[in-house]
Amino acid sequence: MRIDLSGARWVKSRYSNNGGSCVEVAPDFLGIVPVRDSKDPSGPALVFAAEAFASFVAGIKAGEFGAV
Image 1 (cartoon, rainbow, N blue to C red):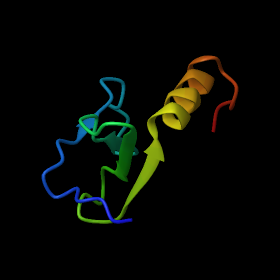
Image 2 (tube, rainbow, N blue to C red):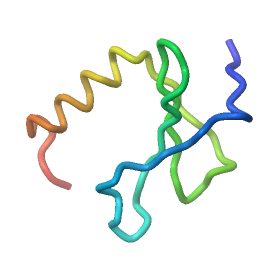
Image 3 (cartoon, one colour):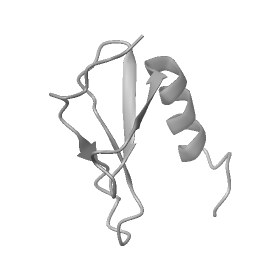
Image 4 (cartoon, rainbow, N blue to C red):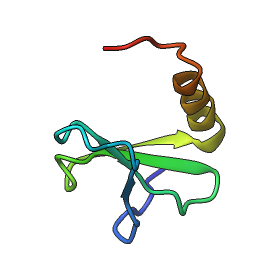
């Protein structure tokens, strides 16, 4: 299934002032969260189920993945 992201509104976290190593999300899609590399806006995007992405973000906030 292809999802048309041509009109997507992409946003970065307000915590992303780290020299360009960021991802952007398109929050306006029902049930899915498209994610892309902010350094390559015309490149590919990954699309996650909204529930899976919410679980991932909760895990990050809880410190489940450690620092890189």
